[in-house]
Image 1: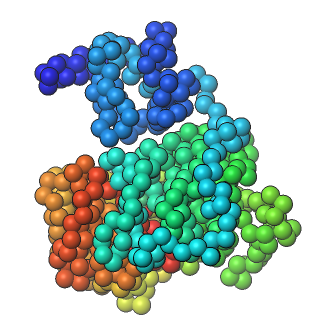
Image 2: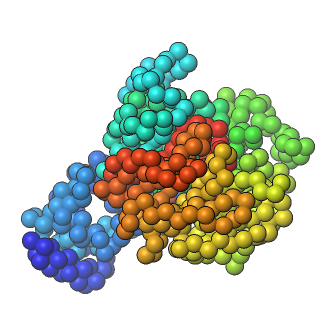
Length: 522
Ligand code: DHE
């Protein structure tokens, strides 16, 4: 069997290069016969994910024939090796990796048509009168996103026992976003599905498909709006946070009509706004959601005038900040005055001040910093920030008063995620890439030295740390189908417990998120 499959794989790889031209009519026919029922006649996805080049980047062209032939474990994708030969599989691969002639549309009609409210009483009911259906501390729960079989586990952060597990949409990405009291949470899938989940009743309340290829979501600090940033189409989608119904679709384009993908959207609570980074045009957008948008922040008067009650009337003013360089991945300082983002210049980092609305510093961040993972803390009376680097084996630590690099801490390989907590002297960073992908470094936040290097599961990727609400325990993921969450005592750095999970990519503590802890993503 194994020989047959490898032969099929080799044949299909060969066939791909022979057929990598315009998709043929029979490829379309094959697609309609075998794929359209689950992936949609327009390739935008139905019960299965969208099959467009942008959505397939992570699978990759080389692995695609194997998935078509053998199916995908823990999903509804069956193998087609009995129905399709290598040549036909190659034709299909070529077809799905070819962009459609006309850019896919996902406008208001389709968004509205996808909207489902499963529990209207939970969407519109009185949230304050309800009690959780479990006895665990609702603020010390973790949601663990298990990418292995597309499930989410609700984990008690005191007993470290799972209390619930439910099926998620295919390929969730980014952090789930909680309402300010931790009662509800929102998830986004790479295919554009937004789901609202009730953390007390443990039920999915509503869902809507806001895009074809979505980056991430943000929830307004007043819990009234969810903003979705899309790669495909080039839109922002604003939803009501109660039942996820559509408020408006905002096309993303500059004055010349050039449209852009959205890199990321985040909420800036003190500003009552969403900050939006754009991938293709050098602008940062700020969308105000307040009914009474403030005209003065920290003593600076805004140069635009907004009538009061705008959001009530369905108007959400957008301030566009023109920049010299594209701002991609970013995070905020704790006061939400500055955006620390990537740049495409040789320095690779830039700081934007939101009060004066201009770049105030370049940062020495060569490589490919993963700023969504940046964290801050206090050191010698100064605020410092630190970020891992996806392409270089070091963590950069920067003084946030001078914006100068204090230290590049050498690691055993490039890292993806970095986390800490106010109550721990350590910052944890993974080594995500290369031969040491099973390593987790623990760094002293004052000496900036690695104090311990852990290998929780030799040979398996260990990644992404999150702390309990009191900072006493650090939870590490083992990214494997046969994976786990490994709980460490954050002081002694000794293992306390191992909870089996299926590729638990990320975990999100309710308290740390809603209190916007300096050691985690917001
Ligand atoms: Fe992510 C968060 C961008 C690839 C797992 N990732 C984010 C966020 C952004 C981002 C902008 C913040 C969103 C938020 O929380 O609201 N990620 C990108 C990329 O540009 C990149 C490099 C390429 C891409 O395919 O989009 C990328 N990310 C990955 C992965 O390959 C990861 C490791 C596996 C996966 O499941 O896709 C991955 N990203 C994550 C996770 C978070 C995340 C687990 C949430 C981290 C957190 O603690 O908040």
